[in-house]
Length: 215
Image 1 (cartoon, rainbow, N blue to C red):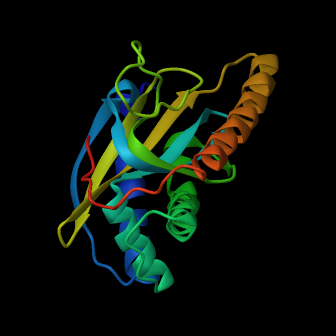
Image 2 (image 1 turned 180 degrees about the horizontal axis):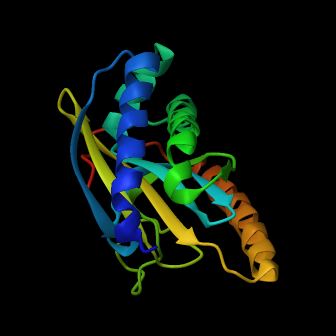
């Protein structure tokens, strides 16, 4: 099935789980706005918390996209802190958030995607982050290399004056078993490289949480 054919099932699973997680774990009531399919080349934000998944039918990523300010507000509600800049505590909170959303969505996604295995979350923050490398490389932001260029099913949520996106990218697993093994190893290797990028950013000055999410 194409990503468009999977959109309804993915949207319902992500919407229901995200609302449940925020209500039960953060004591925040969020509203669900529009859902849409978006090419990952056009995704730009300040903080991405994500994890890879793979299964017999599909493999891909689940991610939360937010501004620095929204990430601080979410982490403060989760951890009882009062952070105003994106630091390790905020990143840990956002990593746990995507982990809970992915874990809760896993069962709900079985009908459309089959059984899924989740890898370790990673979080990266910066200015004008993009998932895929830009063709010209001169946008002034930080690009995260991806295995390929695919589309995401994005769902927009809001609380107070904050907005954030939860996205899921699902790609069919190759039918050749040898290719599947290589792709799974590739996901693990990509996860490792992303962690190294995150670690390298810790030496850079921390930004203030003022920017709004750009979608």
